[in-house]
Length: 238
Image (cartoon, helix red, strand yellow):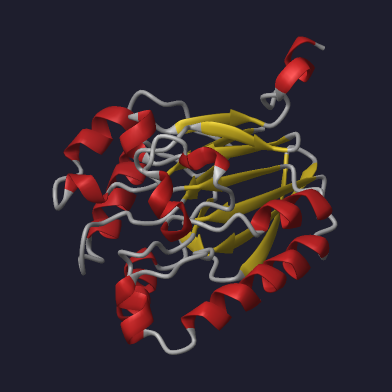
C-alpha cells in the first residue's frame, strides 16, 4: 500500500501553482494524508484550490487530514463546507478503512506541545491541561484500533527526534516527546507529522518510523510504502 503525505503548504500563500507542478508528477497513492497548515492565515478557500488539483489529476483515493495551528477553530466549519465529504478531517478521532485487503486505522490529532506558545498561554484557557489530557486520549484511540496497520497523523511532532535541525531551545514548542511512549506501547506502525519546517524528514522511536512531511524539508509529496517501511539501525541490513 502506498501512503502519500504532505503538510505545511502555507509558505505558498494564496498561490498553490507550485504544488500543481509537484502533484502532477506523482502517481495516485492508495491514500493521501494531510498534516495541517494547508494555508497561511484565515484562507479556507485554499482547500478548494487544493481539491481542484486533486480533481484534475483524477485522484479518487481517500484523503485524511488534521488541522494545523494556522487553521483556527473559527475556520473549521468553513473548511469542512468547502471540502464537503471529499476530505475526512480527524480532530482527536480515529478512522478505519480497508485498502488492498488490509485493515488500516488512523488516529488524527493536532497533537500537543510540551511548551505552549505565548499566544496559547494568553488566549486558550487550560491549554497545558488540554495537551496533557490529549496524550492519554490518543493512547486510548490507538489502543482501540484493531487493524493491520496503525498510523498516527498529527500536526505537531510526536517526538523530538524529527526536530533535529531546529533550535533545541524551541523543541517543546514544536511537539511533545510524551507521545514516544504512546507510540511504543500501542505498537503503532508509523507516525506522520508536519509543523517542524527545519527539522529532519525521518527518525525512529524505538523501531517505529516517524515521518516529518513538512513541505519545506522534503520539497515533495512523501510516499510511504507500507510493505517496505524504513528500518532503524542494524535492522536496515536484515
